[in-house]
Image 1 (spheres, rainbow, N blue to C red):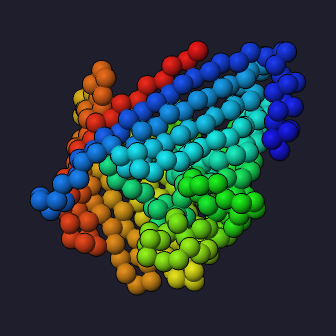
Image 2 (cartoon, one colour):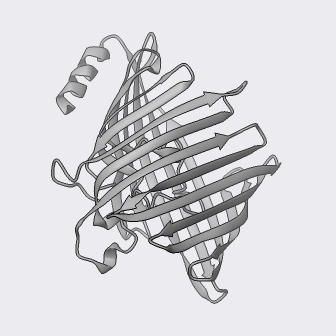
Image 3 (cartoon, one colour):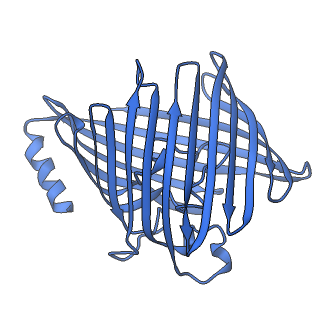
Length: 312
């Protein structure tokens, strides 16, 4: 597969143009739990490089890599690295490498820089994985099908890995495409390092099977995202729901709401979050309150975030 993509580059170089983009972001946080336990530090630092090769019809080949350092630089990972060949009008695209799996909201949304989590740390156990994906857009329909290794973004597993499959079918409508809905399915095995309690067990594989429905509503001054998932983890039933909304109070000030509930093998856990975001010329400042229903914790969280990109 790597050879195929290198041949594509060689073919297009003489008849196409290319552009580069360097991106970096910084996520620093302070978390106060029950008003006495304080944790502050660098949550994530990321650096990405993107190369886009175009021809007379538009973007043709995209090469992308993202390196991240988590938890005060204690955990480094090659979070994404892929090559994507785009077919005519984007009707079909072939992606090889480590990418966002096509499933639910994960297709075009992430909470990795937000003050709250979605369902994926519990259900699929990961948002990124290494493998092959076929995706595209045909009129108002978008689709994605992937076969991956089930090891996520932590480390480089031996081929072929655990084998994990994901798929999503979406529909966009509205005058400006402000409504998006999708159905998804996932099945296979993943590595235990992506299970919430992996530190308490020896490494092993986990069997997962899930189905999901998702919706995104974006009429203009506010945006809402909803997702429901149901399935099994090692034959134990799991059902969960996630929702978030950003509402523009002022041009630079947003109200942020989010919530999650997950029922696993008869036990329910979740959270409710309310906060605000202010975007200055150089930084985004976020602050909020979270109530953890499982541990009965009251959590105050604050974030300073900066992202920039340099095209060349």
